[in-house]
Image (cartoon, rainbow, N blue to C red; front, top):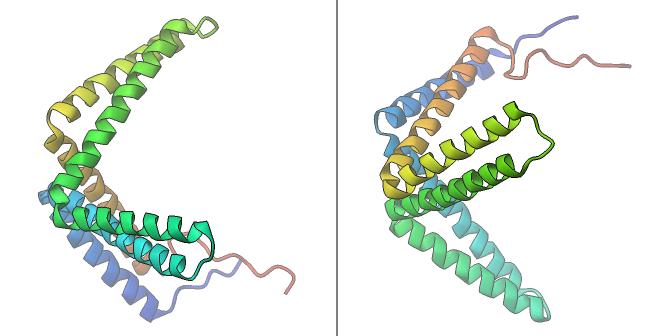
Length: 187
């Protein structure tokens, strides 16, 4: 059971990237809207490239799927450009959609809790409680979407903080993030 350490250059890269991610996480936690808007920019760029690819591949297709691919690509490009031009509005729109989804989920859980004839009393009560909590959160997010955007930014900041610490500790210890290396079997 020989556990090899990572090469020094890899460990230095891990520590450096971990520090960068740690600094970014602190920036996001100080200004959570920055984190949420950064995600909107990132996703908008991904959509832009996906739309461009769809248009280009549609040009070289044959048949009716050609026009569908080009049309869908153009729609995706337009939506991504709108998201890039109005990132805060896009973030708020996404939060509002999540608020509506929370509302529907809460109503669904309450209906399930009331109609569940076979579940235990504890299970029904839990379903009702989670449903009520979902509806309350949905009302808050729909009434004040900036709070939802801030909350999303805080979650992103916490995730970045944990990731940065993991990468730094992997670099310091010399082991990968996944633990020890698998042993060669049959070699």
